[in-house]
View (spheres, rainbow, N blue to C red):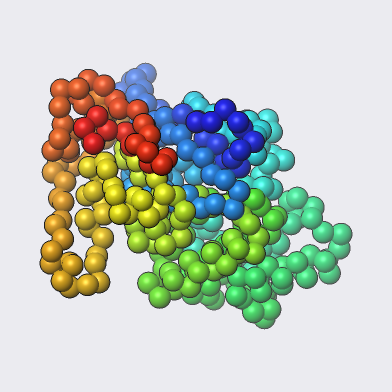
Length: 323
């Protein structure tokens, strides 16, 4: 990573998140949910983070915002090292849109109170009238009507609830938003609307996103750069078009081969790369490369040494000995 801390809005270096798991009386072993993740995001940029379920994507986002206390590594925000002591003032600049719009909203609060809660916490208004005006402006920004303000979350569809969550995240005018699979619980037609809204908001407000998802088509559409995660580690990171057209890591090749192709001729000509075996448990990580147990190109070196992320040209980083 670059030593120029101010070059990036978000600069993550060797982030680790281990959860202690009891295995017997007085015995605990670490579950390595995130194990040495590094990446950076510039102002107004979107980094997509993809990988199969359980690879640690959500844990990365939650650890960055200090919802989990990190086990190791460093996180610089706008050149400032984020710690438990200074996270309070920085929370205004870093927000999160959660995956499930059904459980992330308080059912006992009206929409106006849900969106206005961050304004209350950070004291961002001088009177009730100003608070009300700010909430209505945020609702308009995400495509909700003013009459929705007095309703409760259960009265809305999934797409509308996610819009409420996005308006709540935008209430404090953040510079960086972690989007934790924000469209995975929505219908396909609604997904497109929400994705387009994210892009419009980025153009208007200049906000940066860490966009977490498992759908490569969605991530490629919205992201400038994409990072691929496997078993707590980033195995490949590159520009979105570069990764889509010239994938290098065997895991990325397998993920892209599973993406549906709308053209029947191209679909018949394409070859599906099916991975053998199951994902190892993060409680009992394999030695060396974490992907070696499912890789057809595995060698003795893969079993002994974990490959670092190395630049293969034009910022295309890959962690593989035999790529």
